[in-house]
Image (cartoon, rainbow, N blue to C red; front, side):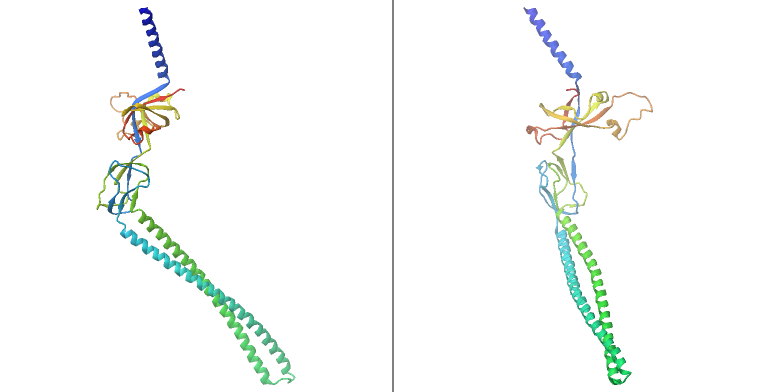
Amino acid sequence: MKKKVIVFIGIILAMVAGYRYIESQNEESTDNAYVHADVTAISPEVGGQVMAIHVKDNQWVKQGTPLFSIDNADYEANYQISQAAVEVAQAALKNNQTRIDMQKVKIEQAKQNIASADANAKHQNAELKRFARLLKPKMISENHYEAQRSTTIDANAKLKSAQLLLTSEQKLLETLHTEKQQLIAQVQQAQAKLKLNAISLQRTVIKAPFDGYIASRQVQVGKYVQPGMGVIVMVPSKVWVEANFKETQLKAISVGQTVDVVLDGYPDTVLTGKVDSITPATGAQFSLLPAQNATGNFVKVVQRVPVRIDITIPKALEHKVYPGLSAEVTVVTQS
């Protein structure tokens, strides 16, 4: 009986070992893996003295949360000046449009005057011809003819004057239209400057660009900061795992495969993930001092290739998975 039990246990152990062996053939594992994130140094886009800091180290913040504020007195003044400049430019444009409308009325009146003067000139010229015919047979006196000739000359002069006035009014309208285009450009320029000053004023309050932790603050109230100066480091909530597999393991790994991830800090929780991408070079290629194997003695070293793994963070570990944590990764190479 005892012998049967030993045999049975041996069979069970052999089955387990066989199963484990078969499973290992369908997996690729490594403990050379670490959590990564796009750690970002937050910089102001405008310069000035820091007036207030709204967050503290290690605080969790949502996107859009104010981080710190810069003295906005100069930016507020520039905004108000540019706002007044827009109003002045718009008033000048409005006045120009009023003058254009009035000028159009003058042109219409000038056209009516030309029509009236033209009709009168035609009538007087016809009368002068008639008087000339009557003068030869002495049917009218010389004085009557001279009077008509004078009236005709005056009518023609008035027509010419009306035509010149119309030309002058039309040229003035063209000048006003040219001036209008310049004023429109001035309004647009003033509005653009107002927009830039509004943006600069808005940027005096620096806000979180994404959800994440305040990792460190390198700014204090009263400090003068410049655009581009990294003053607050933020760690985003979006993290991934970078696993460094041996080059001999790569043949079985491909994008999209399921991955089990166990973090050293949370060994009782298995995170699921997928292979997102495989770096197109070994880690040694990104070293500041790459190996020079063409010189001296050569010792072959198995190279490692970084593989990016996107992971799903369970509710229990939300805001607890930090960049730099160690992990053990198992890629399921066959379903």
